[in-house]
Amino acid sequence: MHRAVVAATLVALCEHAAAGDDGLYFAESFGVGMARGDLRPFMGNPLHMRIAIGGRLGNVAVEPWVSSDLQMDRDGAFRGIVGGEPAAGTADLASYGIDAKYSIQIDPHLSTYVRGGPMLASATGALEGYDGYGFGVAGGFQISGQVRALGFLWSPLFFLKRGPLITGSLYLDQGYDFYRLKMRGAPAINAHVGHVNVGFSLGSSF
Image (cartoon, rainbow, N blue to C red; front, side, top):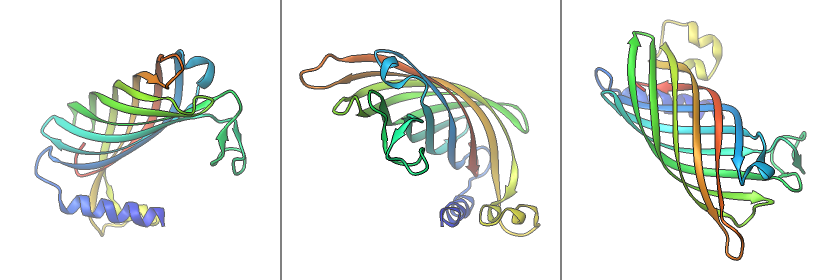
């Protein structure tokens, strides 16, 4: 079901693709976070996940996104990692925001980018009740090429010469998210979470 939704979305993006470097895209990445400051005792090195949908015009894109910094040690999780709550004394952090992204083409298949923007965040687990705001910055490199959108329904379809083409990329992303979190009757939290992620982008241009 998830693959069917992704494939349908990608076909829709293809139909709305513009000429040149303009277009829409979907991006998803996974990696390791590195909490620092007041968050360090509660978060350590969480799993960092990020999902974004963007629209690009020339070298600039606007990218709304959501992300999660999740503890791998969880109570009540399916198979120990899916769902549940962060283990006692630890916390998860959920964030969402919007970034401006600037890309530079190095060659037809390789580009580099920087991005940044404001965010809102809230914590669970040992920091339940804390929420606030922040600002994130990141940069990276991506390698791109064209694939068949129907391949996301069934991987062998990537190799057929039928169906709409869509641009796909693999990218390496490194960044820092700076937070100020508050809860009534408790000290404020000032900290940042660094991250290194590997991800993919799919769409008409990114």
